[in-house]
Length: 101
Image (cartoon, rainbow, N blue to C red; front, side, top):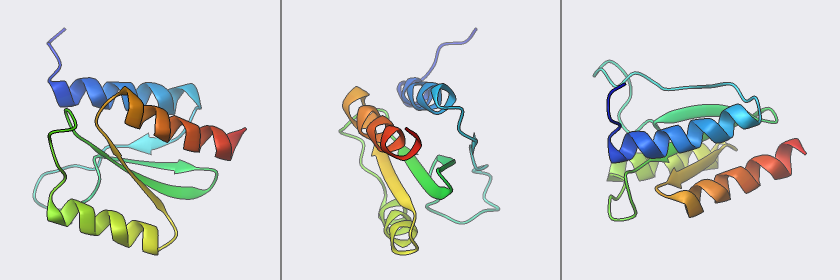
C-alpha cells in the first residue's frame, strides 16, 4: 500500500464519514475535460447536493474558482464544505447527522 499524501489522508477521513452514513459519493475526474473549480468530492445528503473541497491543511487555501463554485452551489440550494482537518470534517459530519438522523 502506498503512502497517502496529506490531502489524501484528509480525503480518506471524509470518505470514512460518508461511508459511515452510507451516502452515495464520487470524485469528479480532474482531467482537463470538466469545469474548473468543481469540488473534490460530490455527495447527496437527504436528497440535497453537497460539494466538498479538500485541502491538506488549513494553510492551503481554495482557489478563486473553487470559492466561486462553492458560492454557486450554495446559491442553487446545495451545500459546500471546505475540509482540511478533523474539526472541519466534524462540521461536515454534524451537517450529515442533522439531515439523516
